[in-house]
Length: 197
Image 1 (cartoon, rainbow, N blue to C red):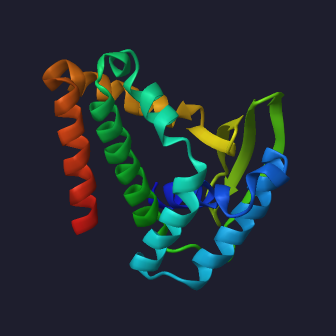
Image 2 (image 1 turned 180 degrees about the vertical axis):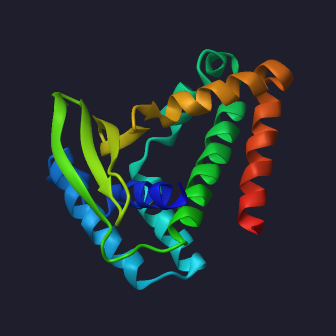
């Protein structure tokens, strides 16, 4: 399972290394996934991979929208400072998760096939298939929307399981148990623990 997650997350990291406004979403995903796979194959230093995650993920993922969708209705009840703390903590958790997953290595046989974008206007889905030597292919869909800053990923669906929906369930449980501040503390603790490990 870790190898599947690693390959999928490498694709996630590759979404943003070139100018978004200059390409269709599918062409962009194809070029950037190829570029990041090449970089990761050559460099397995955990600090370098974290820097790669920071450089490639942060500018091109809409973490505010991802967090808002994952939190759901309670997002509207959160204060602006709580919303900012949620976005910051969730972003840290995701970036740490991505960099840890790819630090386990990528083989020369790993590849990601990118399909044509589906949908239209400012909201599309780019479907990909991640291949790992000796393993079944994994379907990974990127949901992107275009705003004034270009195309941004706001959800990732792996084998029909949405990242946003998956977190939404666990976030709802934590909010019911200890409120928005409790969720913030859990996310901050998880992000801190990931940095230590």
